[in-house]
Length: 205
Length: 378
Image (cartoon, rainbow over all chains, first blue to last red; front, side, top):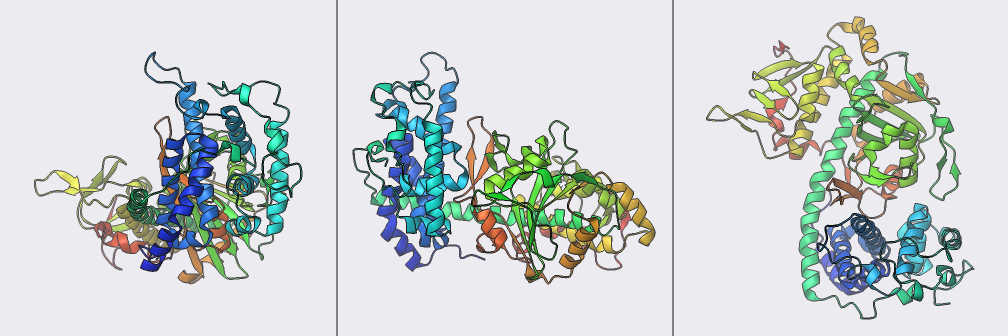
């Protein structure tokens, strides 16, 4: 039976890494939801879960927190989309224009990104998320997924190729279909920032 | 690559956030411990049902063509199933409350069982029925609805969600569970006093030993709110143990049932009746011989308790926009595969320990009758 609380040493190691992990969780969530407050809530939830099982998470905390934060953020966006799809009584809701990703720069790109991530097979999504959304080094991605660096390389290659496939043809077709997607003027084609080589370093094109 | 999507203002975690996180984390840890005990022992009920059924030689079964279901390995490449019984293989066991194709039918229990005969180990990972994930047909739903679309959708859902290749499939109907109990002549249980549960329709009017029929045994196994007569002669909750109490009672039922199945009331002459009662309540895949499965069950029965590991993946509760209370796998969903492979012991409930919390939590109301204890038939 697992100890009910971390030892004082484990507790101290959580404290030590708290700031780093909180920033990581917030960054990943923000890239998806595009809202500072919402990303803060998501980061907090990811950290709560990490602390609840810290002895098991500790060794691969970065990858673990990043993935939980991503999944929470994707769930959050899904719920938000669904709420916005429902007709609201007049004057009841401030609407998507003032809340959520649509109120922020690059909203169209976020919608596309979320869409594309959802379409990826689980394994590829994990790798792409950790490697490019959380900006973790390959070795750490491999460690937190319990696979080899070679698998990370091949899966991120496939993942990026799949991202390009999903995102490529849609461009020029207009917005990604999200309600309140009014950001087309500032959209950059998402293909432009997906490197064409699997070894491509993350960075702006 | 996604730097331009970043928040221009830096996020500053502070002391207040850390305090909050740790307080919530401690509460979450307590809740998870309670949930973890749950899955393991529900699985025992189903395992017992399957094991009892398997003692029957050459029953007629419905077949499901698992061989035609396309599955992929953890690396995304097509995976072929492993059908050599002498090598480790994985069985998906689905406990259902009816027949597929009928509206509203669900899987109440879903187990992944790794049968590792070379290593002499059995690992059971139970998937909570309220687990919400993307099903193989593309919808996001509770996993217990996947089976409605057929065993193939269920298998592909498990394969896609957890990266586990399902080598064999065993479906057991809960109708079958009740008829199993009836077929072995009922399950004798000793009660501290009268009990009832309006929620499941359970009514045991007398204390002492009673032989429960299938329907009543099922009502007891499902009861979360057992009531006993209070000091004012009104029905009052027997305990606040909820799931823990239920789990403890399920284990008592299983122990008594297992003993009963080994020695059915009518002796070996009862076996044909047993076969008749469960026929149609069991579905096997096309690659699984009844002999093979029977051999595996006998092998499993011979294993020492410490060679059998049961586990439930860590889960997180959340409420869907529609208001449904559901669960998600907490963290990496590959935990299911790792629990099955034995490369992650997290969340495992060692056999024997699961009953301990329940014993003090209301399980004492019901016990396996002592040898020779006189029992009232029902």
